[in-house]
Amino acid sequence: MAKMWAGRFKKEADSKVNDFNSSISFDARMYRQDIMGSIAHATMLGKTGIIAATEADKIVDGLTGILADLDSGALAFDPDAEDIHMFVEAELTKRLGDTGKRLHTARSRNDQVALDIRLYLRDAMKVVSENVRVLAETLCDLAEEHLDTIMPGYTHLQRAQPITFAHHLMAYASMLIRDLGRISDGVKRMNQNPLGSGALAGTTYPIDRQLTTQLLGFDAPVMNSLDGVSDRDFCIELGSAIATIMMHLSRFSEEIILWCSWEFKFLELDDAFATGSSIMPQKKNPDVAELVRGKTGRVYGDLMTLLSMMKSLPLAYNKDMQEDKEAIFDAIDTVNLCLTTFTPMLKTARVLKENMRAAAAKGFINATDCADYLVKKGLPFRDAYKITGTLVGICVDTGRTLETLPLSEYKALCDTFEEDVFEAIKLETCAMTRSALGGPARESVKAQISWAKEQLAAF
Ligand code: ARG
Image 1 (cartoon, rainbow, N blue to C red):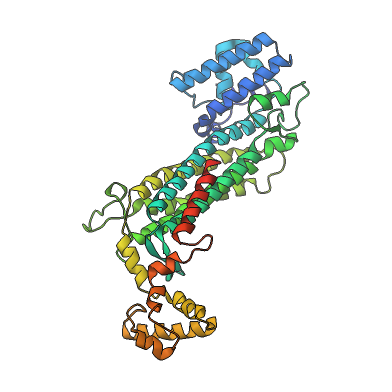
Image 2 (image 1 turned 90 degrees about the vertical axis):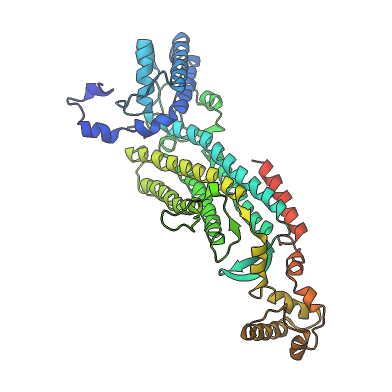
């Protein structure tokens, strides 16, 4: 196919350059946005009299037909077209002749691509948000079932203080709610119309940018044409929001992997969400969680691609920026794939409550509560801390726990101890009396769940 710029050139492009330059293999996915953008542009050209209203109507009809044919599969993408913009324009001209050639008046592929990617991301991020929301809701549902499921809470991966499984799950719900906020902030900043920026310096035609802004559902036109064609901040911002979601999924995955090990045995994955080994018959592997953890690196890579691509680029458009698409598309595809697999994996997993409780019962997870018991009876915390430490030491040396140590041994160290110490250090007491806002007590977690549901309703 002869190039649009054949008039200026004496030679055809080398076939390698053609392939190298081409982006249709990956930007074809923006065909709907490209056509919707062109429909708005043509409508504006007709309304302002830049082209005849009758021709604008024909262009809009022609574009609508192309969209329908691409949707139905009646029309296939031409891999020889350099990019989706060239493809749609060439197809329109094939269908309408000279009228089709008027579409690109007062426009450049530079503002066109800046428009398409924004429109595409606006749609695509709705899907990502919905997938995040579904996972967060799943967490709320699961938490409601596990308000009394005692488990060890950890710091340094050492058993620290007793919490509940619901409390643990709601920590992830909080992270996901922030992720949703990040997406909506990024989309809000992105939702400005670059169309009319032209190649870089706007245009001499009497275009109406407010009209295209309105037609395409943007909040405002981009205020500077150089910025309009060369800004990719929104790809970086949304890429970063996606990378953060992946980081959260990766932390959760790591825990699931640990919890599925024989050492923990807190969770058993449904057979449909686990895999076996080709050699070891006893194995049930958490491959899904491992892949989510692994793919997190890939999405970080996408973000790094975007940041590095933009570093030091002079104003305005540079072809480097064509590299934005594969990176942000991959980030979106990957996070969606991970979310839609992770959520049902979690939903179908069996929670092994007894093992969680048993793990909480060892490891002196109630030592803080033992010290607090003495404090509540009037001892200074540092003294109480020291006495409890000594008790733990005795237990470790003699293979016992704070629950099994007789009162006489408590009293030998400190006379303040009475029979009620055993009630105070019971795991249920320890978890359920941590009722301050944000804590693991039943009522406290219930409040977290209703708060989360309220937050989620806003997205
Ligand atoms: N395929 C190009 C991209 O994705 C479209 C813009 C081309 N503009 C240009 N001046 N070559 O960035």
